[in-house]
Amino acid sequence: MIEWLFGPPPGGVPSDPGTWLSAAELERLSRLRFEKRRSEWLLGRFTAKTLVAGALDRRGDRLPSLRSIEIVPEPSGAPFVRDVVSGTRLPVSVSISHSARRALFAVVFTGSPGPGRCAVGVDLELIEPRSDGFLRDFLTAPERAEIAALPERERLARANGIWSAKEAVLKSLKLGLTVDTGKVECLLTPAEVPDPGDLCPEGTPWRRFSVRCAPEILPAGGAEMRLLGFWREEAGYVLTLAVAVG
Image (cartoon, rainbow, N blue to C red; front, side):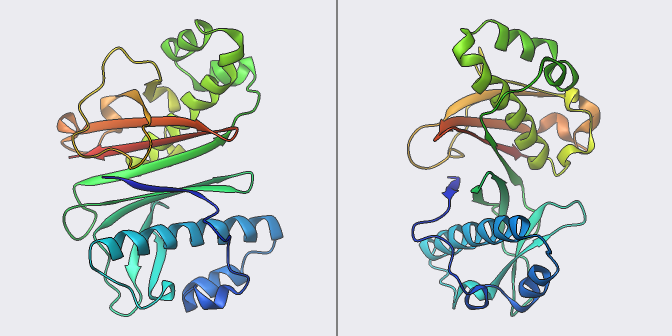
């Protein structure tokens, strides 16, 4: 099961970061000069820590406090979770995205210590206009055809949703926007999608999207990898979640 949270969490972000950020995280916060960036970073980190702590607690791994875990970037920029005291990496895959004062976070247990056998990626997009040039430059012909086939009132959300799905997939592959987005194709009304098994987002149902990636962007042995995609609209946003398995 994939646990997720569309923040801010109930009650919002505590006013004193020192009560829930580690020393290293407080130091990083001090380097953020602009208030918008600081508030987004705090929202993302608190959303993330709240969900990770809850997931660990439900497994019987109760934490002393939110300060006892850190959300740390890998060299690729992808986040992982570390136990502050032991310095060890926790057996979870996490991803975070924020947009216009909201944050989306997801966590899944990898099944083994270290990077694990599955990785999650999320993206959050405010539904807003996208130019024809944007669609030509960043979407594939089948993706553009899917949008064009819809009633005009649905096209805006679908354009944002497809773009968001691409970002979520690239995050699950730990690539981010370092590759040509044309090498990832996501259709939000697919004819067929793989069975997700127990790797579904918890709670109210999400819709599925299909994923097709160019072989050269997949990791070694990627031909055996399963890529699962989920999406939903909520409160004027598109939320997407992708899982790479194998």
